[in-house]
Amino acid sequence: MTSLYLVPTPIGNLGDITLRAIEVLKSVDIILAEDTRTSGFLLKHFSIDRPLKSFHNFNEHRVVDGLIKKMKDGTVMALVSDAGTPGISDPGFLIARATIQAGLQIECLPGPTAFVPALLKSGLPAARFVFEGFLPHKKGRQTLLKKLAEEERTIILYESPHRLVKTLEQLKEFFGPEREVSISRELTKKFEETINGTVEEALNHFIQKEVKGEIVMIIAGKPE
Ligand code: SAM
Image (cartoon, rainbow, N blue to C red; front, side, top):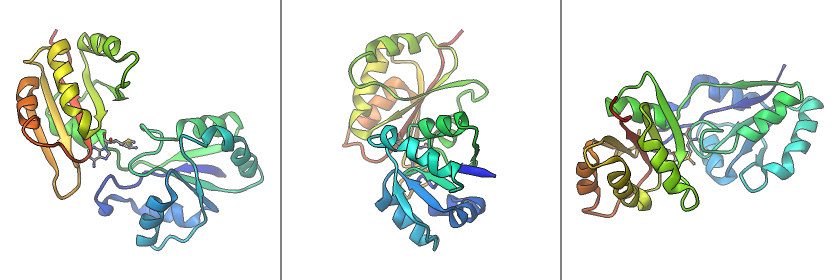
């Protein structure tokens, strides 16, 4: 019997939830949510009425043992994050590992995650890639950028709108102005936009006005 389901939720367009995600969320005893308010809206929209419990970066270490104990007693749980697949730049890894180590069964449903559509919309090689998630803000940032500049596979980063221009400026410095990039903004939403071009071109595009929304950056690997 499955004790924990990791359930992806839409990254913008509610139509992207899967039939199985709805079915599983309706069937479990407890839904663990990164933000109970955000998930509350989603669950209400799909008439899912199961008890919600808070599970996020700031309490996961404290509550995980208690949750495992409950699972051992037969409670079936689902984990959702604010958007996309739990565990992908979101809480999920810790409880998944603890569930497996406890000898309990876990399932991860396939579903929305932001980097896959961004990668395919970039037109850059998608057969081999590295996913780095968010770059560190300070410590280790330059070291990682220098290392990534030598990476030959396509590179995927998550970025916040107010850091995008700074990151593009650093890509110009470390990767060079001619490196190909693709910036996808607001995927699956009303103002979805993908800009494909060189680092220099992307910088010129985004420097002009305040950048808003959620962003995935795809960077071409170093040419061989
Ligand atoms: N768990 C999510 C997933 O599976 O993609 C990622 C969660 S992470 C906290 C949030 C980041 O994902 C955003 O800052 C952005 O980089 C990316 N993201 C999420 N939704 C997006 C969207 N609709 N368009 C572009 N990027 C998005």
